[in-house]
Structure formats: C-alpha cells, structure tokens
Amino acid sequence: QVQLVQSGAEVKKPGASVKVSCKASEYTFTGHYMHWVRQAPGQGLEWMGWINPNSGGTNYAQKFQGRVTMTRDTSITTAYMELSSLRSDDTAVYYCARGGYYADQWGQGTLVTVSS
Amino acid sequence: EIVLTQSPGTLSLSPGERATLSCRASQSVNSGCLAWYQQKPGQAPRLLIYGASSRATGIPDRFSGSGSGTDFTLTISRLEPEDFAVYYCQQYGSSPITFGQGTRLEIK
Image (cartoon, rainbow over all chains, first blue to last red; front, side, top):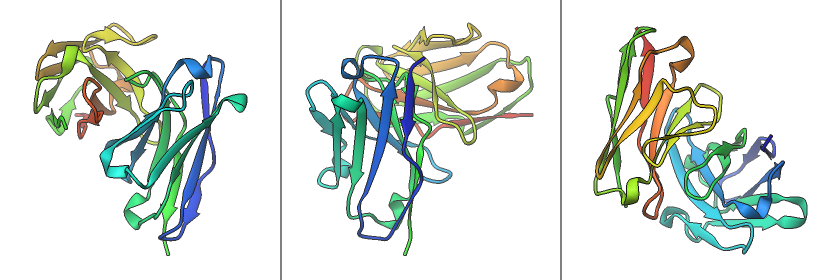
C-alpha cells in the first residue's frame, strides 16, 4: 500500500534551518503532487505549499514565501521541505501528504522543536 | 484567501447518535472543492470526503458530505466509538489551500 515515511524529530535553535524528508513508496511518485502541512502543538492544520514531483514546480503559501523550499529527488522517490530562519512559533509537527489538491495519504509527521 | 469557519467548536454526543458538523466559507468554494479529514490524537489526518460529497476509499457509508457554495456539512449517521476525534474541513478550489479550525467530537 502507499507509504510516506518521514525523517525523525529535530531540535533546532532559533535562526537555524531544518530539512524534513518524505520517502514515498508503492505508487508512481511523479504522478501525484506532494503537500506539506504543519500543526503547532494543540492547534489546527496549516497548509505550507506543494511540489509537483514530475516538474519540480512549487506553490508556496504566502506566509512562508522566502523561508520555505520544497524539492524532490525522483531517483529515490523522496520529497523534501526546508524551512529557514526558524522561530519558536515554527515548533510543530510537519506532515507530507500526497494529493493533487486534497491529500489522500499522509506521512506520520515529523516534530520540529525550535528552542534556544 | 478563503477563511473556513467550523461549528460547533466542540460537539458532545453519545455512540449511536447522529452528528452534524458545519463548515462555512468566507466566499464561494470553486466547484465544490471541499474535503473533510478526521484526526485522532497522535495520528496524521485521514481523508474522509472530497469534492464535498465523495467518500474516500475505505470510508464507511455512515460518513456523508453535502453542501455547495459557502455552506458544507459532514454528517455521521450513527456514531461509533472510533468516530470520536477532531474533524477538519479544507478548501482546495482557490490558492492558498485553507483549513477550518476544527470541530472536536467528544463522547457525552
């Protein structure tokens, strides 16, 4: 069955960057967009953007423009989300999620903690 | 951006009862591009409904979605113990994609 396996938890200092990976398997990686969604502790879901794994094209939420970079490596069917200039309010679980527009499969989530 | 407002914030019901969750958009959602997700503690969200009314693969038929324009509803016909969770609506008809703030469905 479709699997999205994300990298492990990270602890970062304010101002640093974090790069989260999402390994896809059991489907055609280039056939589906990959979204990134985050969830701060006790809060709701926040869409960050998507990447088209086929073309590499991206669409970022304006809130994250200039701080987020989504990339992919088709040879290893892995998508990446890098967030820079981290602040304490970036502490959240970050999810990758497969889908054209709605997300039909989700990764397990990666907790990113930003703390001095 | 389209703001989605879900109501109620918390819904307290008993197993076997019917649940009705609302999602209202600040402007019309293109072509019924609205989805519903269920999230349990410590888990990733799970897609329930897309296109306002189409059930995702493997979703029981006690879950149904309806609505158009700015008003959408998720109905759970007879609550099972495993249905108590947080539910989010999402619109994907306009960029940026946005989520509602969630409705917590708790056991009464």
